[in-house]
Amino acid sequence: MFTGLCVSDGQGQIERIGTISSIEVDPSGCTIIIADSAPILGDCNIGDSIACNGACLTVVEFDKEENGGWFKVWLANETLDRTDLGQLKVGDGVNLERAMGAHVRFGGHFVQAHVDGTATIVDRAPDGDSLRLTFKLPEATPERPSLLPFIITKGYVTVDGASLTVTGVDDGERTFSLMLIKHTQEMITLSKKSIGSLVNIEVDMVGKYIQKSVISALGGSGEDNTGLKGLIEKVVEDVLKKRGL
Image (cartoon, rainbow, N blue to C red; front, side):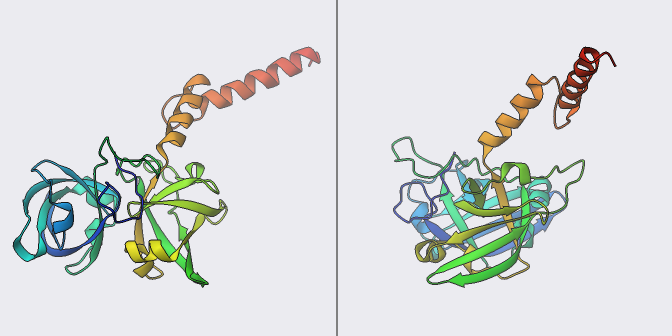
């Protein structure tokens, strides 16, 4: 579990921007080495989870001293398919966050670091010291339902591992917006990304649980809406009967 907070105090939040130093691709995925990460490796062990741009990855090798500290992770094709990590290049920065400790004050929202999909930056505009960003989600498919139902104004969304507050949503355009204050811009890679760049999106898991519970209560299953359709049909039938139609 992670928090996605954009602070640098060693308390389990996004505390470091690492640098991709090596990428090795194989048929089943790829291996990435992330350097400049010594500050988060003090208590690291093989098998630990580190969120990299919001994706929970397992440390398979590390060195706390060499080249400013580095660790190695392996990404399966499923991870590459659902995230922007497959587009990273050597030299790119990566938001890093260790798993949250039980002793830490919790100030963000529950972030699983299980990326739901990606979005594209379609607009960026300065607002004083702040930066306003707008993102466009891809069209829904049977395999990848839309994430829009889980994104609400003033709700939480995780973008590249950072827990951020949504400032606006346009369902028709499939877009949502947020604002980065100066401190946040300095702590994460998102402020450096240009229009057209992909970002990793994880929606608030509470909304997903609520959706599944409602569908189940209505007699549906999975992602379908058969239960809701059945309820509507029953209500219409009862109204018609009462009217003698």
